[in-house]
Image (cartoon, rainbow over all chains, first blue to last red; front, side):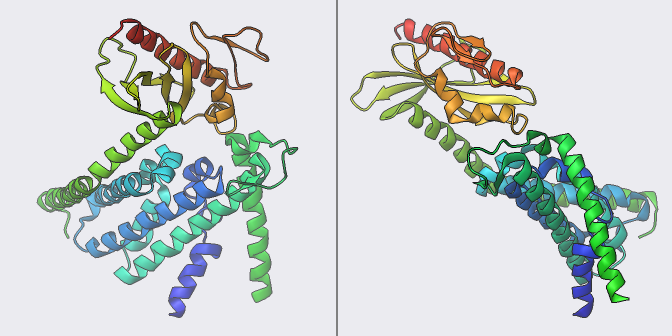
Length: 202
Length: 186
């Protein structure tokens, strides 16, 4: 139990895939323009991550090491397509707003990295928890960045206007350059917080 | 498993087969729902543009730029114009438009069913306030910057000329096709 909690804390904070490991930057920048997109993208990636981690962990002794990457990609691509079809059928609005980025989960390096670094070496339960922890960590980082960008760049949060009609949104923030700026500031701030917390513990 | 050629090929092949089977199954489950949603979206947009009418798809092969054309018939049985679905290439991807044209060849309304333009700039094209300026126009549309000076002027979104042009072009194409169709007296 304690190990599970540690794994979750690791995924959310100390080893956060986006803010500490710095992987999965492309979908992070692309889908963090609004909070609703961020939550949708984060949960979609978490779903794929949990499923692919479970399957890859189950198959880890069967897959010959030389073709492992090809096998992982086929499994991941399969789950992403399943998710894409399910979203188009049952969550059409979200599917429209995330558009191109759902198929691109296939090449989200968080998923391949966790398959290679964790699921291929650990048991099914641990791998599932790792998928959940990293998925939540990705969602958490996306939500932080998206809130920042949506509040400054559009003056809304989750589509609800915050500042009234007189607020002139800083549109640059919801575009690519603003994404880089916000991400940089966020990573720096996160490092400071993590260091402070760690310093207090030791 | 060992890295023998047979093991490598067979494991990868089995995984591919299993994944394909799963995909085939999910596609079978969702196919109809996805098609229904797409059709419902088009119907809802058309009903929004031309209220109290029924829509019937007609042959649009004479107009290659048009994806689909629907003939509108009002509840009292009169000709209520046509709705045209087409895509126009925007800044990032194709913009899919539905343009409703009244029986008198004026634009009844424009709706966007798919748009993937830059957030905050091109995406403003989907703003009902911007799209509403097409309503009532007819003939040849003229895209202008800043402010409207003539009846057929359409004011472009500042910072999104490509998107504004794409939408206006799409509406023009739809209008021409519809005018031709209605004018033919079919």
